[in-house]
Length: 313
Image (tube, rainbow, N blue to C red):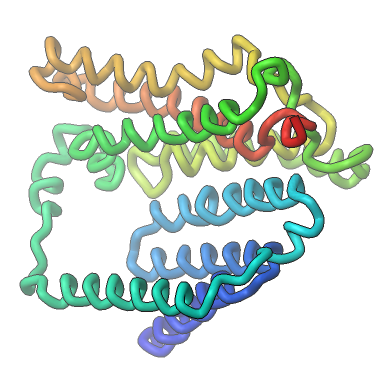
C-alpha cells in the first residue's frame, strides 16, 4: 500500500511541475506552484523530514505563493493574463535537454553512492548530548552547520533589502499598499480577532519546541507573519513604512545577535559560532527567539511589497 501511495505521489509531483512550466496563464501557474509545494511537503513527510515539510508548507508554498500573486496583481492586465511572446522551439528543446542531463547526472550520483551511503548521523548523535537539544535537526542547524543557518537568516533580510532597493528613495517613507481593496468584511475582522491570539501562541510554540521536536524559527516565523498579515487585512493594524526605525531594529536583531554569538565564540569557546560550555541551549534559544522576530517581520514586509504606486515611478 505504501509503495502504491508513494508511486502516485511521485506521479502527482511530476504532473504538477509540468503544469507549472507548460501553462501560459500566470495565475494558473501560481496555482500549480502551490499544489506542487503541498505535494512536496507530503514527500518530505514520507521521508520522515517533518521539519522540512513544515518549512515547505509555510514558506515555500504559502507565503511565496502570496508574494507571487501580489507581484502579478501589480503587473499590467495584458502581461498578467499571458506570458507574452512564446519561446522558440529550439529554446524549448535546449531547456528540455538541459533538464534531462541534470536529472540523469543527479540520478547517476545517487546510484553510485555506496551502501550504506556516507552519513554524519552517527557523529551528530554522539555529540548531541553536549548541545542539550532533543531535536537532531536543530542540533545540525544551530551547531554543526551554524554557518549555513546564519546565511539562511541573512538571505531573507537581503531579499527584503532588494525589494526596497527598487523603490525610489522618496517613496520609502510611504506605507505598502493594502492586501485587499476596500473595507475588510466583518468575517475577516472576526477571524482576525478570534484566531490571532491562538496563532501567535502556536507560532511561539513552534519556535520554542523546535529545540526538542520538529519546528523552529522559520516555521514559527511563518505562522507569526501570517497572523500579522491577517491583522492588516482586517484593518486592525497598519503596515509600517520601510523607514520605521523600530521596524529596522527588529529586522536586524536576529542576524546581529547570531553574528555576535559567533564572534564571541572565539574567546569563549575557541571557535567561530562556538557556544560556551554549559550555556549552549540558553544561547541557542536566545538566537532562535531573536531570529524568529526578524524573519517574521521580513516575511511580512516581503508579502506587502514596495509602497503603493512605486511600480509606476
